[in-house]
Structure formats: structure tokens, C-alpha cells
Image (tube, rainbow, N blue to C red; front, side):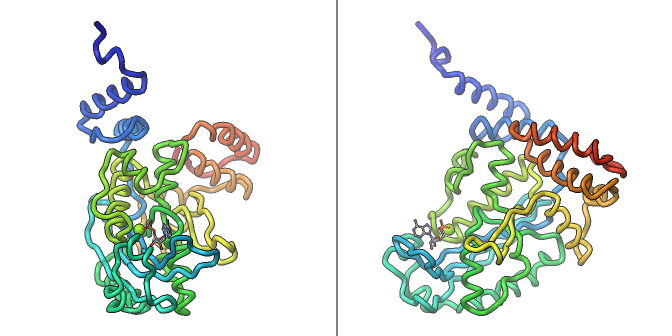
Length: 334
Ligand code: AMP
Ligand code: MG
């Protein structure tokens, strides 16, 4: 008679072994094989120093129809923020308000069902500019703006669609802290070397976590996105901004931010008042023989960060290019 272990597929056996290895190391045993193998690998590596002290997680809800027409002008109706301290690995504060839409003051039946937001709630809510002023005051009250801070969301739509459209409708600038953000869907795919990007419920499922609360309630969504960010940090991911607004990139209004640009932004933020990490100080000292060598080095950093197999040929190409161009003149951090 065969035992149940004999009937297990190779994948199931691998997952079981990974769970045992994670448990032996005193690590969280939840998650699929990709998550667990990355978690165990990062446990064996040196502890990662986070670039940002604070991560500000946002998840807007907006007016909508069952089929949003092209160029539909969404208006923000729920504005939740969850402030994470990445050094402490925990939620330190939350902000929440609903907002009153002005173009479509009456919510569609679909929107009420989808978001769970009732008409009387938005009728008595502040306008978006008033809500944004309250956010600004809340941020200033915490010490979040005096330390390195990055915005994060589970996709690009929160800033590039909802916030951009809303600010343009109200004739106000997008706040400086929202010009760049961490698209956690991309960070998640890269860090755990997944074939595909996953949405919020997919990322939670991969981590073996349950959705807490009601999906499409902005605050509950933000709390769940925040859990993913904390898990990424706990699994050795150094969170960096990877997208930014770009008004010239119609119709999407955003562009990618590669690692070299993200690190440069960190340095300029630090020079403008934040603190500097030791890793940044190391990089600042690097000198290059030529602009081509500097560019090759910067792209090399991006690719090394991905750690995916498909990057290997790019990596070799860039190593060759860097050698041909004279390489880095200063001390390298790797
Ligand atoms: P979510 O964060 O997934 O709750 O979505 C944010 C906003 O995107 C919602 O408040 C809607 O305005 C819009 N949205 C998301 N999914 C849909 C959908 N299936 N149909 C219409 N609008 C949607
Ligand atoms: Mg949401």
C-alpha cells in the first residue's frame, strides 16, 4: 500500500521541504514555494538596510460605472493612508476620509455596491482639496516628512489616474510626496522572481495571507497592501520607488524609474533635509572613467537588482561594456 507521501507531486514535496527549512530557521512558514525560497535565501544573506524610514500606503476609491467609458473622469471618494515605519516593521498611523465628488455627486448603483460607500457618506464628506489639506496637516504632524518617505500602492492607477485626474479637476498641483511611488505589484514580482505580476488578492494568496476586511473598501485595501509591503521588507526586499508621474506620457501619465534614478532621488531628498544611509554614502563616492561607463554601471545596478535569469545576457553585455569603457574608477560596493 502506498503512503500519501508517495502520491505527492514533486511540487508538493518541494513545498513541504521549504516549509520545514523555514520552520527550522524560525521563519514564517506561510506562502508558496517561490515566496518561501526567497524568504530562506534572504535569511541567509546580510540584513537589508531600508532606504526609506517611512512608507505611505494609499488606495483610493473613485466614482465609477459598471463599464467606465474611455476618458471617464473618475473622482476620488475615499482617501485612506497607512503609514509604515520600515525600520520598526510596523504600522505607525492611519489617515482616513471620504470625499464629496462634484462632477458626479450622485454615486452610481454599481459604485455603491462595488466600494460599499453610501450616498449620505459622500454627501457629508469634505471636498477633495479640503481632504488633501487635512492629509498635509496629518503628515506634518507626524515626523514623516522630515525622514526619507516614499508613497506606495498596489498599482500605478492610484496616482497616475485617480490623484492626477482629481488634482487637475480641482486646479491644484499633485503634492510633491506623490510624484514618485513604489508600485508594489512590480516590486513583488521582482523580489520573489515570479513569472507574472499579481493583483492584491493574488499577492496575499501567494504569501498565504487572508484579505482582512472588505475588498474595495479603500482603508481595508490599504491595510492589506501595507501587509504586503511589510512582508516584502521582512523578506529582505529593499523598497525603492519604481514609477513616477510624467505629464508628457499621455495617455498613461507615468513612466518607470530604474534603480539608478531611484537612488539619485534618495540622495537629493537626503540633501534637502532627510538622512543618508550608509549604502548611499558608499555609492556617492564612486567615480567613473567616462559617461558611458557611468551609464553602464547604473544599468548594471538595475539588472543586478532583478536577479532574474533572463537578465544574465544583459548582465554579461554590460560587464563587458563597462570593462571596455574603463570601468568604475572609485571603490565599488560589490
Ligand atoms: P480598487 O482599489 O480595486 O478597489 O479600485 C479602485 C477604483 O477603481 C474603484 O473605486 C473604481 O472607481 C475603479 N474600479 C476598479 N475596478 C473596477 C471595475 N471592475 N469596474 C469599474 N470600476 C472599477
Ligand atoms: Mg481599493
